[in-house]
Length: 187
View (cartoon, rainbow, N blue to C red):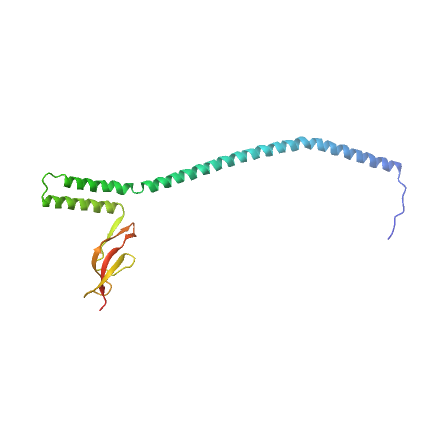
């Protein structure tokens, strides 16, 4: 390792170094005091922005809660009044029955006529409400729409519906009640 010989310092050099250090210190204080108001202003701006964002977040949260509450109310009303359309259609059927029974001296023909009219009104109400009748005579047995309660000997092909004990119903394409049927037995 090589050592550098000590060189005597010139008093002039140390005075220059001291002056530079003093100038730097003064400049540092000057910069510090010059930037302090700038930092305070930046902090104030950041606090204002944070306050605005917090306010916007609170409003968005409140709006979300309102939307959720309204949606729950709408779901509740939809469930509560889902049958309203069908009930309105059934009122026509009830009126028809009441008119049939209100006849002073009913004959068998007038009662029959009133019952036919009532049945037509009921069929219209079913149709308007998406309720469809399943009457599968002569169709191939479908376990999704039919419930076989017996198998009878028949000249029909096996698993063909040959008798309907009770009609089935579909509601908007979904089985509400399967048809109770008898199917042809294989020979």
